[in-house]
Length: 191
Ligand SMILES: Cc1cc2nc3c(=O)[nH]c(=O)nc-3n(C[C@H](O)[C@H](O)[C@H](O)COP(=O)(O)O)c2cc1C
Image (cartoon, rainbow, N blue to C red):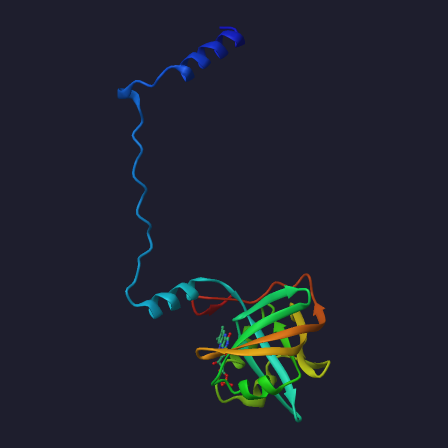
């Protein structure tokens, strides 16, 4: 059969009405494998545990003392002006100095800095948290060496929602390592 004939025969079969007996049955969509939970807070927590997050340590210096906290509730906010937001629990020890501070630093940790993330989320360690990692001053705030990025911010505004303060920072200076893979948190594990 020539190419032309094959084409014409194909066109005929496309134009012909489908015989009812040969019509394909369309299967109903499969039920999703996920479940809807009645316990909304538990379901939300579970959903958030499943979502990978980049791990940061938020730091500041105030009256000769350093403060820091591990956080994943961090997001870029705008490019005009360059700005970020972070959500900090009212009960965190850094909360009071943070909402008073002029500047703070967001340290995006590298994949091999999970010990730092653990130290800065262990209650009661205070200044001792800074024993984990190598720290330098960056425009008045502590910055960890070998991070994916150190982002120095000027506190711009804060607002409260539920248990957390939403903090907006305008970016003043950035140190970045393009090659460094970030530390990720998912399902309660650093990786
Ligand atoms: C992976 C991870 C992410 C966290 N993210 C946040 C966060 O975004 N905001 C927050 O307020 N606390 C967050 N926390 C909890 C604080 O790091 C933790 O409660 C810390 O111990 C509180 O500091 P404090 O002991 O100085 O009060 C996170 C903890 C972990 C392990």
